[in-house]
Image (tube, rainbow, N blue to C red):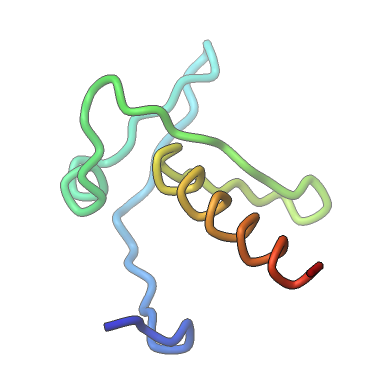
Length: 77
């Protein structure tokens, strides 16, 4: 069953502090909730205009983009 975007509720997992080398630790609850494990690739997207970063597991974004490409091809035809 697909959820409407308006039904999605955000979750606050805590905060992270950027270290001297630019590294940050993802809170344990976030790693558990999002099933993030060592060696997972996270893509970091952002908008400098509003100082916002978004992290997404690469496997999820690539699958989504693949589906969108298919939809756009159909739309063009």
